[in-house]
Length: 190
Image 1 (cartoon, rainbow, N blue to C red):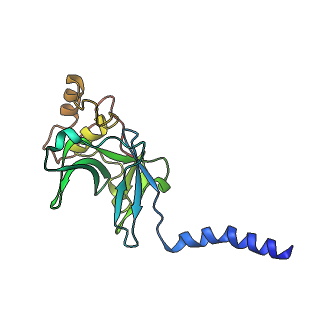
Image 2 (tube, one colour; image 1 turned 120 degrees about the vertical axis):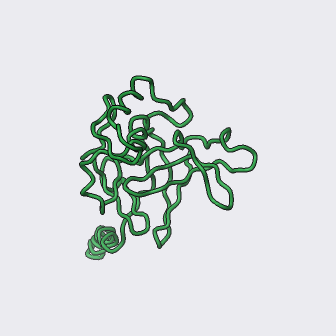
């Protein structure tokens, strides 16, 4: 009987100790449109997306005969999951095919190489950029945020009203921060 108690204690403690030295990565990540992807990383935290049954279709019609439709990601302040057209030299995507990674808790956000992400205002954001968490993004990111709930296979265009609201909220150059939040858009500040 004492042997079972000891074994059970070790089983309970083992998972808690394993997570202290290594960053944990979720096994799936979700984008703004609700699309879910598998997330696999090697020991150097080089990660890749894995299509799951519930993942959206790849952009077959957009890639032409020479490029392979698939998915990839880019990361900086936030993580963008993009449907891409790829070959041996790299990939290309289109703004309408990208969506930001969303979250409900820090554990929903990955670590990619040296960059750790935390959940802030429902988006996975780079933990090293906390001073920007309360700022509005640039025009490009704002358009992604405002239209990101639309699945990739549906038309991805702002209505005339939303386009006007984005123009008013983001009057500067495309990389300048927006000055206000367009009506109806999710607030990325946290």
